[in-house]
Length: 214
Ligand code: SAH
Image (cartoon, rainbow, N blue to C red; front, side, top):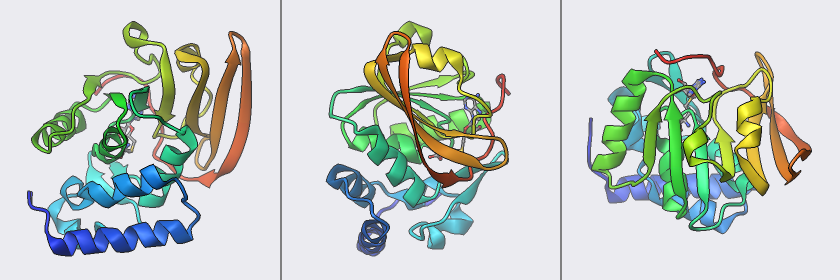
């Protein structure tokens, strides 16, 4: 894996940021984070030349690194503030995690595939991104660390995982793609103990959220 960042990569990132602005990503903190995180290091080497196109790519183990637009949109919908506790379901390549850490949150992330878990935690450590990473089943959330200000699910969930709902702080937000083959990106705000508000944002396509650890 290429471990260098260069002026060329920085230039490509600036172009990507411009493209995201045209696609109506307006949160300055999200755009700044995307301008900083070296996305090319999160892809398999054969895809390095494509790292700053606004596309999803395979990362091995049948999984994909989300499209930059999707990462940006989900991050924007979370409305994170520095210091907030955020739970991510689906560490995958670690790219979304790096963007959120760059935005100053205390990140907790769960991945169910050991191969990806090992690869992404090592990379994030090498790049100096500090968070807490768990091999586990995202349907369970992280009971011991709950509640969270924000929860971001980066795999398509066939239904709203009940345990995740209970791990959102009152006033907190969960952003989750809901549906089987295609999903609708949905924002859920916890208004009170048993009161939730749901907003459907737009259609999207994620790899499925599956059960158990492999
Ligand atoms: N956030 C990632 C996106 C990876 S794709 C990135 O920036 O690259 C979705 C990831 O969710 C995959 O790595 C998949 O293995 C993982 N996943 C699917 N179901 C899961 C579950 N129940 N618990 C934890 N991770 C899950």
